Image (tube, rainbow, N blue to C red; front, top):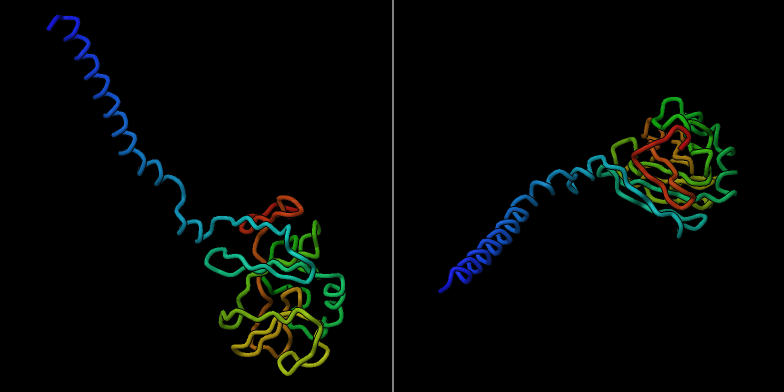
Length: 199
């Protein structure tokens, strides 16, 4: 075997060993690189959640999960919003003074001025944490009582909330449903868990 053939064989062996070693280092480094991004568990504990509301129709609701809790996004019609003024005297905290919401949602509609018809609420009763049922239409029944303008009814202990998440007098729930921090990324996308000053 000549010197040229030996050198060529040695060079090929060194190149193959280097390539194999580089691939091995990349494979070994990947778990460390991947561990730097937040896990699904970490995201569930508080990372913001983006919601596409482009297909949400007036009078409908979509549910997403944020921090392990259901968050409701409700597209209220004009009639739904008009009904809020009719129940003001029946509510525990109509001005939401004792309730949890971002500053931009501390108003009669409990919503951002950018799209006041969009209601965003944590869907857990403030009594014992059950998830209330939808009673969005203005139809009275044995659970909601007379002159119902639409809202939510907790079947566990009978708490009633209007279409701004405000609790009715006589309900076991002591305060209104919380409004989580949120911001509109566009007319069709909401980021829940992160707020801007004007939402």
